[in-house]
Length: 369
Image (cartoon, rainbow, N blue to C red; front, side):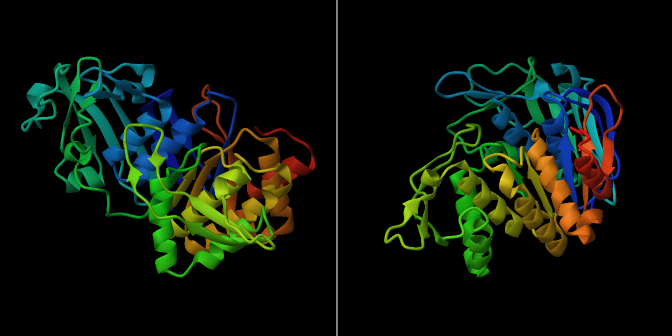
């Protein structure tokens, strides 16, 4: 489990440190303070430098530019402090508790021995320098370089599977699940639901969903094909999720029940899938009414403790912080498992609050966001 994280030259942070990290960590702070960037950096660090983490982050932020029907660009420059990239640029991520550091740097093409043919048949390519990722996963794959254009863009041919560029799917290391504000792609939820069925854990999902709808009886995933576009932030699927309720003879689409039900399904499935690893949640309060925040936190914190999951989440919501404080009051044995971290970009480090301090702030109506 991570206990401290330090980042350098990543997005809006020249240098930043997070101390006092616990099992469940809530990042708070003003808009554009860098909360989501910290989630991304922890994701990349925990993955050991998996390049797909960069691809996913760029896609979620819309840092992917189409160049006609047959070409697309992943704009890597925004990952570097100042939104600028040149052959000497780098950013680094490190943490305490055994995780090796991850360093991402741009180097001249002359320093790259084997230049991968990423630009075959691409009309817009202007190879300028290479992106190198150093980390335990990258090193296990030989530290493969990725050629960038002069603007700092990694060019991708949609006619060719993205894995041709980035290597095989990440299998080594602990499980890591990232939940974005718009929840998860159907293809991801469907794959994780299959694991739930194999392990006979659908009862746990049902009980978690009953936090919002006590009358829920079961959840069913419809079969069907998914159309997967890895650099498109919208995933399109021809299958869905159905729910049945006591007293209703028909199953209804889960989407018709509102954002909260979809969000809680993604959260509960992810808690099972992330066992022994990491769960990263951007805007954890999305879709939830203030009245169930404490119950949501109890689900997250108890499951994280029992399943050895380290959780990192963000919020803008005072109700979300209040719900965490209420949990700390109702279940004092869980206080040591949680912390809140106020993120201020003007400082060199986050301001950490223990579970007891979160409870004290809530009881005295002290604003920590």
